[in-house]
Image (cartoon, rainbow, N blue to C red; front, side):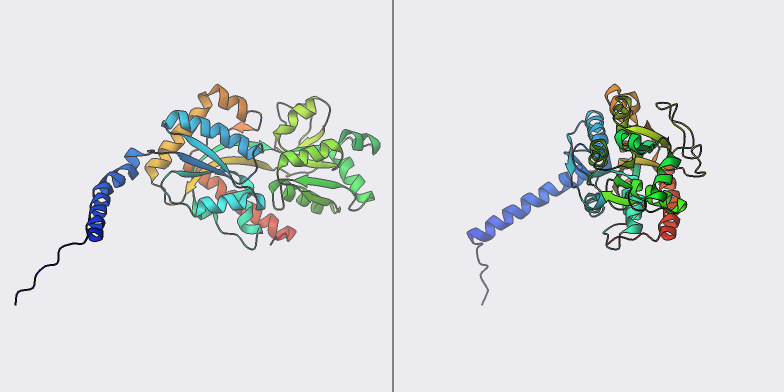
Length: 336
């Protein structure tokens, strides 16, 4: 007996129609995902720090620039926590398709993976796109505290700490932040005991010094307006040479601490495995910030604009990670 073929049910027919539509759409989607057609939709820049922070300020300037250059919306998505590690880890797990990017600072990439026992990423999980800026720290103190205790130099800070163990409080944007490690390194080198007070951002730590809640810290360039207004007293900068904005403020080496050069940077990254063609387009679009008056106005208040290309940027990251590894091991610093 010849078997009769059953007619498709209504549900089966609907499923076949849907499958046919997905198959028809697949070539178009694959075409849209090719580097030549990127970007075809909104790009998201993840920032592991709060809105208004140093890193967030830079990321928003980058988003504005990329949106203009690439012709697609670029949004900033703040994912603060664990000294930037929460947001950075999310990008490490994202698809390498050019639609999820990261703007972060040097602490997140060169220090966090070495100092946190439990962390979800490593530097190899990212493709460097461009360094955005580079800057030294400024050793600032509360003017009232300085006047009361006759603090006029970096050496006076150490002398006070030596006379008053654990009485000096300094802040940073979180445990393991470069500002934290730099101050801990300085304290250990000079044999004094100081008290670290972590905050969620460098701006919050700066407010604490302004109010007298903290005595001192290694501050970012955002301190310059407060210094000009006399609300913060600068004692030294952590660069090999003096800052042109603070020509009368000595370097840490000039203040008596040789080879104490600490700079921090902010950079743009994509997940590892992102097509080289997309990385190249991102770098060229980002480099255009040098010709953008808006971008220059924003970034020049945070540091020196340095649009370092992907390969040399990656080389610098590798060197700094090795340097900080030695500091972390020597200072025996570890965080859960």
